[in-house]
Length: 156
Image (cartoon, rainbow, N blue to C red; front, side):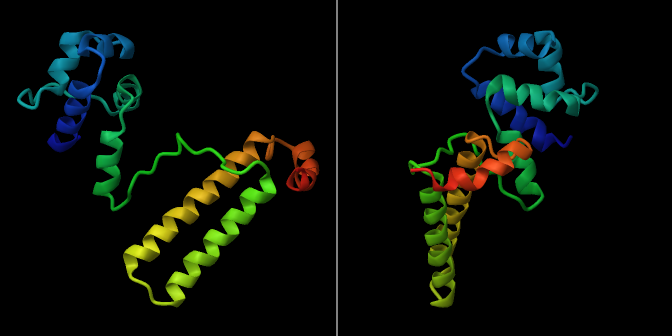
């Protein structure tokens, strides 16, 4: 790992509401070992990549993941707080259809990229809501779910 990612990890741990000793215990490392592995001045101690996920989970933080994604030209988007906002699956799908129309219309009208980008984000959120609704209704769990999916779309 580069020094940059080690600094991001150290900052995540330092900003964690849990004491660093608690974080170390949660990931199964002695406090002194963890602190040595995170010390940018200690070139002999290395934080293993296998510790990254447990550290992020213990700190409930995604800063290292965001840093890595940005370094690769990606961006990180959370799915944690996605909840459908319509009472039926059918209405959820109609919301998504409208978001797609709005997105395409913005491009066809030549609206500024930031406006098109905002409409894209609305569309992506709508697609995620569709998926959460679908999964919450048992969709995709097997043949029985596939047989019931058309009926679920028409329930009111």
